[in-house]
Every structure is written in structure tokens, then in C-alpha cells.
Length: 523
Image (tube, rainbow, N blue to C red; front, side):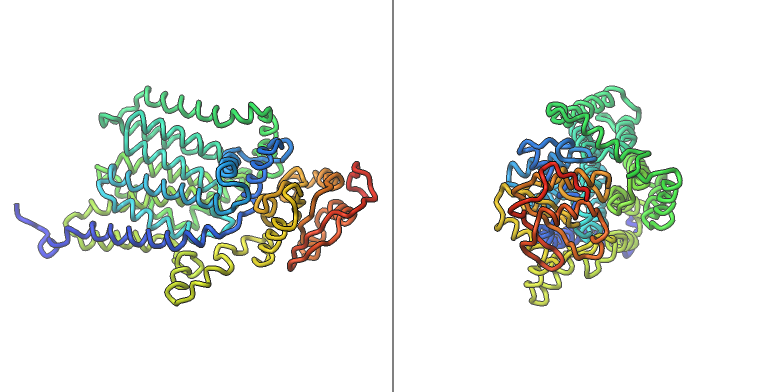
């Protein structure tokens, strides 16, 4: 047969060379980022779940003794880590987060090899997604809205890669784990159903009821098992009451028709990721071999567009699922590009390289892996021992000096006993990282700030009976002066200054108290 490619006949090996390059690139940025990532502190959300987990281990019931409004999956993870590696070890949860990420990458590459014939599309998808995640700060990484869709999408990738009962069972279990962390994951059930309707062990295109029933049964049983600890502890009703506080129509939940539409328009109007969806849809009929895979992930992308608008509040981490679905669609688009113009390998190689290096966010100096690389290359590895690159100022939330924050944690760990409880009025994770139990019926005053300021008297009253306890706060900070006057009056009545680290102060219990334990916080 005559080779019609002319001068491009020697370009057959370009996908293999590009695969090697992307493997080295992605592995390098991960390796450079990892040590820096493990040094990061916890965000306040992590303190919530870690405090509930440690409290439950010591007999304080979650959702009752320690307030909460979220699904319990992340609390379970912190409890398992606490039992296995010990409490207060902040790096352990980041190690687990990295494990989730690596399992997802492995599933993506297996899926790429089995469903798209090569590793290259999956590697391009990784190259597009990793710069996004590796450039986030500590308020956005290891969040529920990252880990929950990561689990669900991993199951869906495996379900497509290995059409059969075993993969369906794994998919259903992982999907249930995702829902246990974030209930919004149910949005992606239609993508699971479509995957079962476009692939089977015999390559059929018709929906078969038996696989659907199997998946549904395993999913339902997994959910029941996941919530059974709350049933057995007798706090399932308290859990539902907590969820009710953030449900649609509550004061906390800001989702209304106008807000939903505004968020959706924002995503569509100011989001260049939609270009990938449009291109994959445009090439849908031109690459018949990829139609089944393309349809599933196009649907997952469209459903991910609803995730952020439907979230109770418009926090940036609500965009994580869209980024993950986008990365997988980049892999699909790469496969389509490689098959549309097979007679022009140079053009293919150029387009795929653009997809691999041009679609992701800019690798700016703030990216932890890139900054660590330049510190190492310039002979200044000591820079990695300073302020972690992920410890940045997120939104309007106050961010204390890194040395001051670390000094407070060190003080609590070394100058207080394990039985000493902490009243955290500072806007930073303190209670669980210091490996101490809370004075309040929550890990900090974040509950009052975010959920219910009406509980101030209850929080103030809890200070009266907390004999072996300390308070961590920033009483002179401008953003603290006018908040919760009754609570702060109780602090000044029962506690006195012990140590100061910048804006942060540690106050210890006074030797004698002028008020009985029934003090209610009023003046």
C-alpha cells in the first residue's frame, strides 16, 4: 500500500515521545509540590471534622455535643486517621488527599489506555488538571468538593474501563462514599446510568436492567452502612437537624432562583473551559470510536455546571467538580484530535501539545511546585522551610502571621496538659491541630459566625464550667472588636492573659471566679 503521508511518514512515533515527556513533567511537578503540601496547616473546615472525630472517640457525640451541619464522610476519614496515626497530625490528612489524587490519576490513565487506546489522552488530561490543583492555597485543597467528586469520577472511569459486575460494584461503593462526603454528588447519577447504557460486557448499546439494579442495590446498601454509625450512636436525628440548618430555604443557604441563575451565567460567561465542551461536541460525529466515552463525559461536564450554582454558598471550592470533569473532557478531546486528521501527524502533535500545556492555568510563581523548583535550582532550598506557599490570604478571612500561628500551637501542645480544653475565638484552625478538646459545643466560634449567632449565650455559658481550659483569641484585632460582646465579656471575667504571639493571645483560667457555673453570659 502506498504511504500517502509524504514527508510526515517518520512522525509515527510522536505520541510515544510525547507520552514520555508528559510522564516526566507530571511526575516532576507532583514530586516538587508534595513536601511543600504536607507542611500546610489545616483550614477551619478541617478543624471542624477533626474535632468532631476526636470528640466522638472520647465520648462526645457528633451533631449533639459537638455541632455540625455536614455529611459525616470527612469526619469518618479524620477518625480513621486519628486511630491509625494519632490525633493532631496535620500532614496525615494531606497524605490521604494525595492518595486520592494518585488513585484518580491511575484510574484516568487505565481508562485512557482501555477506552481511548493510548495513555496520551489521559496524560494530557492530567497536564491540564494538575496545574489547577497544585496552585491552590490551604483553604481550597483537600476540600469535600474535591474529594467527593474525585471518588465518584474514579468509580465512573473504572466502570467504563472494565464493563462488568466487579467494576460496577466498585463504582457504586465509591459513588456512595462520595455522597457520604457531599450530597451534591447525586447530580452525577445520570452519567452513571448513561455509562451503563452505552457499554456492556458484549459491547451492546441498549440499557439492560440487571446491571442498573445491581449498581443501585450496592449504592443503597453502601449508603446505609455509611450512615449506620450515626444510627447506632443515636444521633441520626441530630444529624438531620444539623443538615436542616443549611438546607434550601434556610438562613445559611443562599440558593434562590435568582442566585442560581446568576452563578450559572457566571460560569458560562466567564469560563473558558466551555470551549473544550463545545469542541468535543463538534467533533462527536467525526470520531465514531469515541462516541460512547464522549457522551458520558460531556454529560458529566454539563452536570458539573450545576454543582456550584446548587451549593449552599458560593465558596470557590464549589468549582472543583467542574475542573475535574473538564480535565477528563480534555482527555476526550485529545483522542478526538488524534483521530480527525491522521494524515497530518505534525498538526496532530502541535494541537495535542497545545492541549497539554496551553489549557491549564498559568504556572505562575505562586504555584507551590514551580516555586519549589526555582528555590532548589537557585541553591536556596532553605526557602522551603519558611512560610508554606499555600498559607495565603483567602477571601476576607483574617490570616495571622505564620510564626505566630505556629507559636500558639507549640504553646498549647507543650504548656498545657492533654486534658486542657481550648476555647478558640481565633479565625484559624487551633483545636484539633493542637490535639485538644474544645470548650465550646463546636471547634470554635466559626459556628456562631457561619451558622447561628443566636447560640452566643450557650457558648458564653460553656466558659463558666470549663475549669481546666484556655482561650485563644485576638482581642485587639479590628475585625474582632465588635463581635460577640457577651462571649468576650465572659472571657474577660473568667480568664486572664498568659502569653501573646503577635495578634494572637492565650488566656488562662483565673484562680477564682466571681460567678457561679450557671453564668449565662449576660451583663
